[in-house]
Length: 463
Image (cartoon, rainbow, N blue to C red; front, side, top):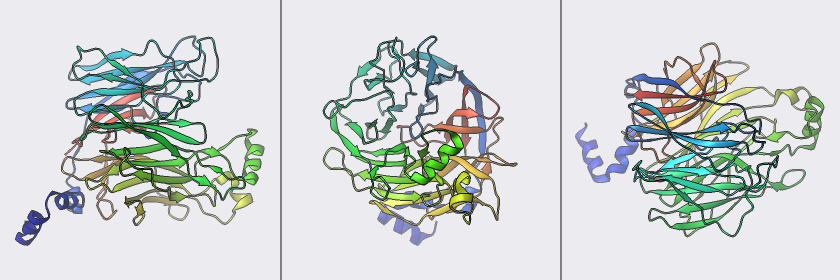
């Protein structure tokens, strides 16, 4: 190393070292070696026909790693049970001997999958949302959020915790919940939606206290023909001690009257949902402060396009990186409402520091003038040395799974094809947002091409 640089690093300390490692040169990124060590089917399921499914908790994860062990939750349909609450969650553990089924929730019926997090003491926490409706009742109804703790010692029985919310919120089977943990500080946080107005949240500190609770009010859509709250769903939520970051997508009934009427002509349905705007908020200390004003990160409102949050990663210093996909327009509406608009598909990134947006970067794009493989899904994967990778799925003739380094200036390193036998088309990872430590192992759970009604697992080693 250059002596002057070495002296500077010694003065400025670890934080600058981490930044330098994140922004390594393209030649270093080119040295990435990707080995697929495990590919296997974890479980098969029967569709519950209740509007949800094993991958419905997008933004959270159903997979986490503790040392050499991997934990996963899954969703089973209960025979003869009536929807909507006709499922139960299951917990698995994988070690050197393969997968072992540890627990099935035999007492609660639910609708949605159950995300999990892990804590520094080796515990696994599973978020449940059992219905309070009787078995003979079909449809929705009240629910009771709970967290099951599985201690590191498998000889100890699990514990059932009931979060201490603010007041007595009226939870239902449509929870849209988000579960996040800080694997270094031992804190965790649960969000759960209440209808179209807000999310209730609860925070548990490293000492085991319910140290914070409150309401996260949705952004206000004053510009709509009918002003309304903008329900924000499928968020990527990250926790750093007592600081939390929340990055989600608008999920409301079509707010444009003309577009809604036209869509009804096409589909015959009264409803169609808007996923066109991305919002971000944060709270520096959930035990003392409120959430900061919402920031709109991206919008495709003008041409009825679409956006989808992919992931969020927190730098050691507290700034965050967010990743999302964009579709420029709804082609069903183009000829009537915006005939001059052009279609495009892109993967985008921005760094946010103190609630302020940095420069947006387009990492990949396919346009009508320059068609290219389309990125459908992407997740961050931090390595132990501080470098930040992005794992993705792209469609097209040369489609499949790819991995590349995202450098500090928002540019890509060389892209490496991941030689999976069956590419993952939708997936969760064992992410730091659920307490997993950065690692050379990239763990995946999700759906793969050519396999219906099955959830698969893969372990990829990046060296």
